[in-house]
Length: 311
Image (cartoon, rainbow, N blue to C red; front, top):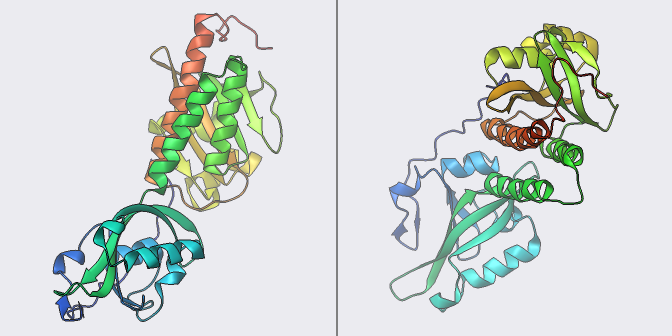
């Protein structure tokens, strides 16, 4: 569940007139593909793109028509390489599927899987180029996270505490937050077990009233829960906002031995760009890895119980 208000960025519908290159009509099916599709002429000037392209790259309906495709590439050398390959006379010389990093209108870059090649007439002459572009940056980021989480969990140089702290640091980097907490929740007591922060260290064993934390809302919702600007959400009137002025929050219940044990959360006093649905899945993945480490601690009697004192 996310408290973020997702703005509507729906671009206008693409033009309905026929688009053709050298008398070759662009199929209607390109218009409604979920992946971005772009067509350029033999001089690499953009002649057409679909609605999905507008959404992915951030350009309006006619904004790029007649302009060079070079501005879409994150690196100039990538453009030159694909330009040469795209106009290769021998079809076998062209790799029709490749990874490419492109650049949005706002300057941010992203990784894609691109399928493309030349559009030829009956005599084999190149009339233009097409590309079908799929954003794989989130998929690749999750793959990289899984590899790094596995490396941490199997690092023989780290004890269980070191592994949990390394996971928290990794989560802060991924979610672009300053702090991360692992808590133990008993009724209305919210006890800090692990803390990682670039701003302030919270000692193990520090206790807060659960109602003074955003995690109380998350647990009531069944979690996970995310917010990128608290003052514009229900968190703006929450005691936690008055006490700590935390603008960014993403949290999830922690499960140990099949039961809710506490919470995992990442926070920052600064706003960030809105969380996406995929972020809620990612924090559940982080929670599973932290929960695994806590299960190890429970098996070796290192986890606190109601009769223990934290040190």
